[in-house]
Amino acid sequence: MKYISTRGGMDPAPYSETLLEGLAPDGGLAVPERLPSVDAAQLEAWRGLDYPALATEVLGLFATDIPRDELARMCRAAYSHENFVADAIVPLTAIDGGLTLVGLSEGPTLAFKDMAMQFLGQALEYALARRGDTLSILGATSGDTGSAAEYALRGKDGITVYMLSPQGRMSAFQRAQMYSLTDENIHNIAIAGVFDDCQNLVKELSGDLGFKRAHRLGTVNSINLGRITAQVVYYFWAWLRASDEIAEVDRGRFQVSFAVPSGNFGNILSGHFARRMGLPIRRLVLAANENNVLDDFFRTGIYRPRSAADTHATSSPSMDISKASNLERFVYDLVGGDPERLAALWRELDTRDEGAAGFFDLSAELPRFASEFGLVSGTSTHTDRVATIRAVHEATGVTIDPHTADGVKVAREWVEPGVPMLVLETAKPAKFPEIVREATGEEPAMPAHLAGLLELPQHVTEMADDAARLRAYIERVSG
Ligand SMILES: *Cc1c(COP(=O)(O)O)cnc(C)c1O
Image (cartoon, rainbow, N blue to C red):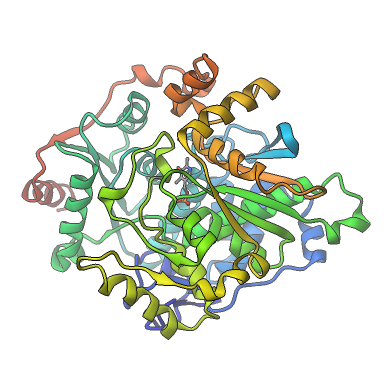
């Protein structure tokens, strides 16, 4: 299996090489030359596997350049009970209205990004060792992605992490989670500024190609193909668990729908891959918050990214995006894998960037979004989140987080009789105490294994918003 660029300008590359790159050299994203396919007999053969074994099978279809025993070892290490507290790793929990939650937040940072990042940490360490290379991850975080990356990369050979965060702007929980790490390869740097200042520093240093090469700077952001493929696994897992109770003769026709709280279109893109591989998925329901560029796209066929200034700060903050970086991979399929047409669409976004906002119009293809790809969408607001957290709590005693609430709210609009609706639970409520208190009047419980986290000593370097100082810091550490 080889990987090519959505824009056509990259020689086919093996899986482990795409992990070390960000964008393809032509500005596009890596996609499989052809998606693998899985039939009903194969699905049945996988039914008895535990999560790491299933991950080995599914990822083995993508990572064909990694020996199977190595891949199995990595999946066991990533999806271990040290990292994930639930016995099943990914538990399914029925709630009211015929919905089922798919628990993706059992990992060290209580959010679904751990699912992909833990595997990527293993895969990067392996790919670097094979090349005899090292990597420095330079990232900016407002909380969630940075902590998932640090927990996945702590103690990994050949990898150093420099994570910039805005000083005084993260929650007490997020600070405790990141700054309490004591691993020597993890460097937390609190910048006197806001998140955009952190991101600009990353851009400035990564844009200096000499510096970038000398210090082997890279990223593990949401376009990373390793993350997308690792996320495909839990769609298979959820379908298998939802169909465990179905009589064997009926399983071939057994379809489920998934509702996915979405931001950068990474999580739901993995569902799109699973569906194209042959997993019986009826609908993929995209849930957006007030930053609903994607809901607009899936209702109108017009994609109009917004500027950072037009992005609202909401109570489901991990979905506050103005540009969905993974959408390009879906549009690539929509245009039949035609790299020229794809590149022309993205040129429309870029050329209009001066002054008027760029957009492209695929409304002529709109009927195919649902009929061919099963993709539908909806929007949820703060009022909806509060009402949904409260309603689920009252009906079932289960407390959900605000992102999962966006998923539940939109899922309810698309439920069909006889088709189970599986809602991806993307975070635990303990991370978002304010809105949970507003909805239920109760403080969300801190998971037992994190008791005492807030009291641990914290290690962070405070720094002015100054690229020269950051450069000097990295030079001192990496030599
Ligand atoms: C990152 C994140 C999302 C959005 O996922 P995408 O892959 O960017 O669409 C939703 N919920 C939570 C809690 C997240 O951390």
